[in-house]
Length: 59
Image: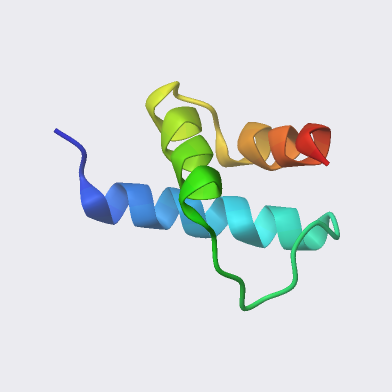
């Protein structure tokens, strides 16, 4: 079972890091596809830094 609070904290850190890399402007929203990728990365045990880098690769 996914701890929703841990997932939310992790996703927040990813977005903050992605913002620092210039990938997103805050505040931001995600469509279903983007949210699904974040969930996949979370379940794959990527760190927030790795997930933010993966966002770079996507663009």
